[in-house]
Image 1 (cartoon, rainbow, N blue to C red):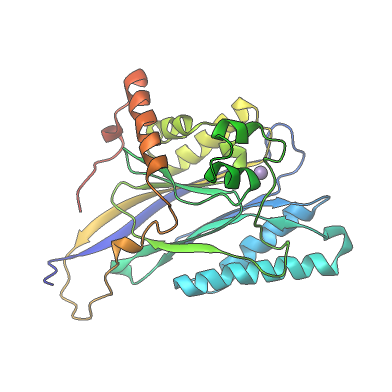
Image 2: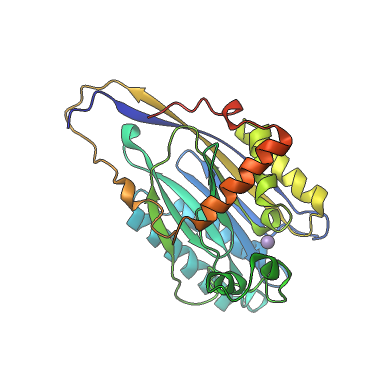
Length: 300
Ligand code: MN
C-alpha cells in the first residue's frame, strides 16, 4: 500500500466530578493524562467505596498499559490490589468499584485506543450524528434488558437496579471486557459514572456535548446538569475530543495498520445506535441544533 501520509491523533480533554446533592462523600475517582482516561465508582460501607475507587484508579495508572494485553492485565492487577486490601482490613471488607477506561496505544503517528470495562460506569462515543454506548453495563438489570425480559424503563425503576454482576475487588478474579478502537476525526468520548446516566437521558447528554464544543466545558456542564436534575449520586465525567491531523512522512518503518473490524467487537448489534440516531434527529428538529456546528467533520 502506498501511504501518502500518516495520521496524528490530537486529543483534548476535560473532567469534572461532584459528590452531588444527597451523598456526603464522593466515592467516585478518576484519572486523566495524555495516555490514560479512567473513571471508577466505588461501593462499600464507611470509606470502602472511596478507597476501592482510588486504589483501582491508582493501580491502573501506575501499571503498564501500552498494549491491549497489558491494559487488561492492569485491570486484573487493580482487582487483585482492591481485593487484597479488603481482605486485610475488616472495615473495608466487601468493598469494590466499577472501572472504565481508555488507554492510548501505538506510536505517535498511528495512535489508537484500547477500551476496558468492568461494572456499570460507561463510555459513549458521539460523532456528530450517532451517539453510542460503547461499553456494556455489568449489572443485573442490564442483563435482563439484554435478554429482553424487561424494558429500559423497567430497569430504571427496578429495585435491584444498583446490583452489579461484575466489579473490581469483590472477588479474587474478574472478567474484563476489552477491545481496540480507532478514533476518528470529530469523535467525542464520554466516560462517566452512573450518577450522570441515572439523571440525564441520552438526548440531554447529546445536547450538552453540542452546546459545549470544548471538552472541559462539556464535562462541567454535564456534571452541573446531573446536579440540577437531582444529583442523587456522585457524578464523574471525562470528555475527550478527537482531532486527526494528516501528516507527511518519509519514514520507512511502517507502523502496523489498525484493523477497523476489531472495533466495537462487544457491541452485539446496531440497534442502540440506530435508536439514538433517531432520538438525535428529533432533538435536532425540536432544538434547531446542527451537529456540524461543533465538528468540522473532515473526512479521513
Ligand atoms: Mn454511582
